[in-house]
Image (cartoon, rainbow over all chains, first blue to last red; front, top):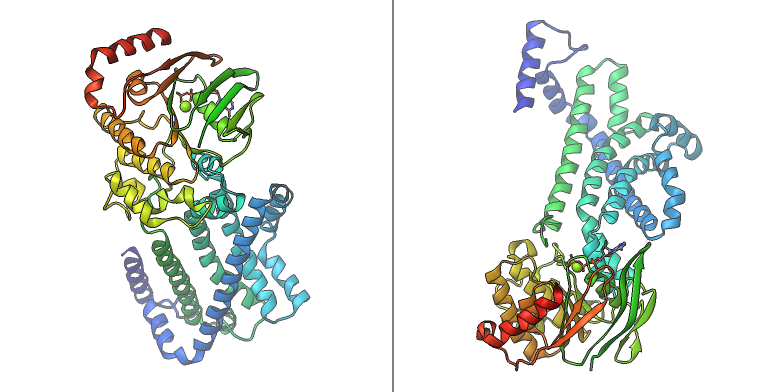
Length: 242
Length: 242
Ligand SMILES: Nc1ncnc2c1ncn2[C@@H]1O[C@H](COP(=O)(O)OP(=O)(O)OP(=O)(O)O)[C@@H](O)[C@H]1O
Ligand SMILES: [Mg+2]
């Protein structure tokens, strides 16, 4: 609702004050551009979607694997946890050109960038989930004679699932952003490329079209994850079992 | 075929001595209650039997085998509820068995029915009342492969009505199964009603203060609670606790 109101105000302003389109196009202009030149940019859109999905998939897997390893091997956790945080302190904008220098303009550096922005929220959230396992349940499992593996598979992992999902949700939105950033640095197609082209030719309406699609893509990802989450942890209740 | 011998067990935490020279035996098919004030170290004793940590001195023998620090030898139901909130009731009761072999779901359903829980197989713990959850936890113990059961104050969080009903239920089920039970409580009446023997612990540090053998025949009826003889026993135990 708020969004619709904002759009109406925006539309009204740009008509009232006759703002030139290259400065700030009215929402109606943006939509028109979006519809009419669909055939021009749809391949960009698909390319970015593909890149985000692949990068996201790899990012999630890496995030889960890293979290599991750090959790199961406490000495490794102590050694690598600071490194993990450090890896997030390097701005992607600085790292990205480096990756291009090392790996060229292909898929690899782009996927690396997305993976790098995606895995961290998942690793941190998953580790927290593992660590917050209820001590009573842990006691029960240990005294019942469960092996380390059983404790992990039957207790810690399912317990961490809600945390994992909050990490995955954050990563889902990051992945689209990561894809666009990686495309800025050198690619022949993608929303990032389309955006750069539009920007350099002052087609502000096209920049907005691109922004719109980034948002839609993010929301779509997010929605899919939320659906999956509902499906997997539908009937559980955090205060249960007390 | 399950006899637990506790021999001169001593345990300290930091410099605080919690258990001192605890010795007693639970014979095959016997129901023994541990009665002691809050904080006297009853749960600690269970954790030791269950192998969570080793005693400073002394030993536990189950069927003649030393089980110090060995996990999975007994079936334990913790003081606070320990059902897994993301598992259905049916999946919860087979957990103990599942750790060692493929669980027998038919038997589990049958036991749940006897516990008055039919129709709740696919419910989740948070949908059940406190008394029902305790029954689920006890059914889980019965279905576990271990033939020695430790129950840590299973009824302490229940109101008087439910408690009485649960005691009756526990007796009826137990009189059928006859696994050896070590039962912790600080309710005198409960201890007398349920047990073959009562071990009274003193506190700070806990020592075995006195042992009562309760002669009432089984199966025991509820009317017993109001009999003159029962009151006599209650008095005797009460004197010992003061
Ligand atoms: N892991 C531990 N580390 C240090 N102290 C502990 C530990 N576990 C128990 N204690 C101490 O041992 C004492 C006995 O605790 P325990 O839980 O065994 O009492 P309890 O008899 O079960 O009491 P309640 O009836 O209230 O359950 C307490 O003073 C407690 O502080
Ligand atoms: Mg206790």
